[in-house]
Length: 214
Image: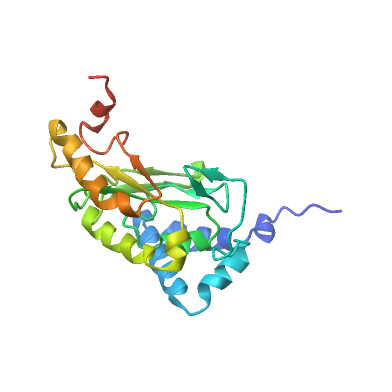
């Protein structure tokens, strides 16, 4: 068979969307537009079921032994969504309907904070990667607790595997970091399938010092 050199003929719809639309947008703006589009789509009656059918996601209302029991929770897929995409826990159920076995929201801090000045997200198309210098921009632990409480009140949300990633507020001194984390954990643990404590981000001054033995 002849081999075509037209790679466009072999590209899927997302590849075309990325190259001709998303790659032309500021990375952070593309991120926000993606969340808004998913929010609108997921709000349409019947859309969650259609998303699950399109992605082959099992019906969350039917208990199934997938053999993927981790941290006491049954995961429908070995693929999870890491923290950073849905920082404020706006769409964890929508992302689960896209086929993820769990969703980790955050990183969220005890106090709401704007993060670093823009631009703070950079797309390296040739390297198929992003540089993230966001700086824990989020609406705070209290706002996230309200959103997760609402999600958990639904039958769908009660079965969902939703992890919560917590970080230190930028204005909190390192010597007060434990209390800052404790405040967030106290608010969010009742709604979290698990908690992850972020002490590795290079975008919060001094945060990595918390990894030291002292």
